[in-house]
Length: 139
Image (cartoon, rainbow, N blue to C red):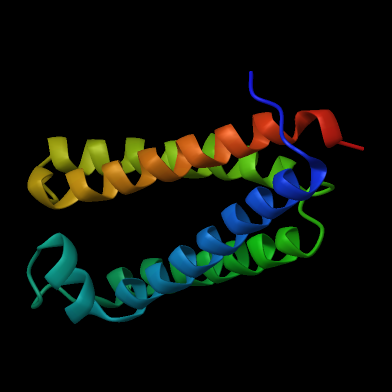
């Protein structure tokens, strides 16, 4: 296993937190805009029920909270690095399983979720790699 300095580990963990915060912040947009959500994931724009809006408003609130949690982690990256694992397990794995079920039921097109899965996979691998590299410096 390669070893890194505490400065490098701190920088990598901080980058992971900040990248996650930016991506999560951007992810709020399709949750709050049905048009953007349909453009990204497909669906029928006319199916904009109050139940749908309610569920996505809750999801957007949770995503905003996670965005702030990641920013908080970036303030003390080594001390708060466990948030990276919590992001991968259960958050990202939950998103992957939910989209897999939705794709299987033809709620979303598989071709629309594959880029999301690639993005989540790459991000998760980066989070896990950075976490492992920071183990020697954990308090």
